[in-house]
Image (cartoon, rainbow, N blue to C red; front, side, top):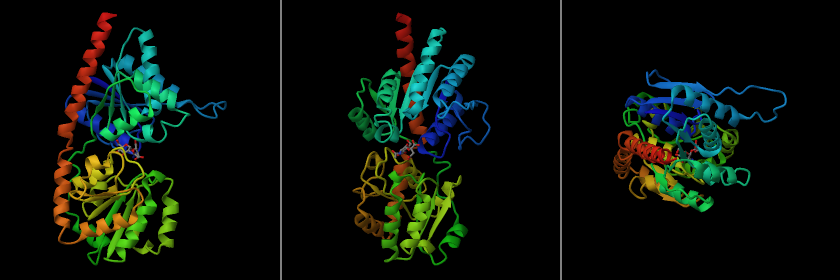
Length: 381
Ligand code: GMT
């Protein structure tokens, strides 16, 4: 199959899922064309079935807001026409689903039909998408997609709750490559970070407000009062500077390191004892799955799709958003020498259920279904 994938190229979860999906499809022999404004961060190798088409945004002094969606639409039209795409799969509704709709209309006028699958990832529904500035366009373009998927049942429920959606939504959970995300022997690194054998807590994210990094620092402060511990924060984003200041105010800065963006996240996770994800909202929690695959239990919020992944009392604990006291207590329970090995084992076993080899065929079957329905529809016209 020739598949066009439109996504964000950045470290954010939706871009990572789209890129890993494209890589997996290419390895199975599909030809995958990525269409985005820069090289996706995880697209860092050569594969004969992978192509990358950059969206160029011409600058013109009149444009206070350069029209990215139009440039993206034009690039989709070019790629679909020249590469004879069978299907277009867009990740994150804004603005990808509406650009895909527009491209589809242009292509149809030229006598070329291509079905669109839209995967909703989270904030495109729960945060930005439902804002009045975008809602009518998001509703329309989801309804106009030939296929719609969400990354959790919770996000499917939210989509129906916030938008007037007439289509069936398929839930296809996020996945992990267990060949890459596995616990590696990095004892020298652990020794360097935790010379006194302190427990190591890790968080990775894009440092947006929704991640509630302030709760991570408060939890860490509580834990550190009871047991020796260190905290590594990986990633970058709008909250980072304020959180570095807060760590100083809380007096935990000497045991806290802000590492910035890292490619080799699995190496950090390999030496972690606990992963913290106290987010306000989280449609799935891909970063938690990456941690679990490296045998790291998770302390998280009981929100969105997290409970579908992190089994309370088994692979970690989920508490109400902002309940720092419960999260601190649960973290100490996991970190005890008696409990930690069991939580680690359970986390890995749970992660295995999300291995790419199980989840990728769901996408292939969904594509087949959409293509069949699409060709049946156009055979009748
Ligand atoms: O977490 C973010 O803010 C990034 C965002 C994205 O789309 O790039 O992540 C969302 O999609 C991920 C992949 O499907 C999910 O694992 C995250 O839970 C989801 N984030 C939120 O819902 C806040």
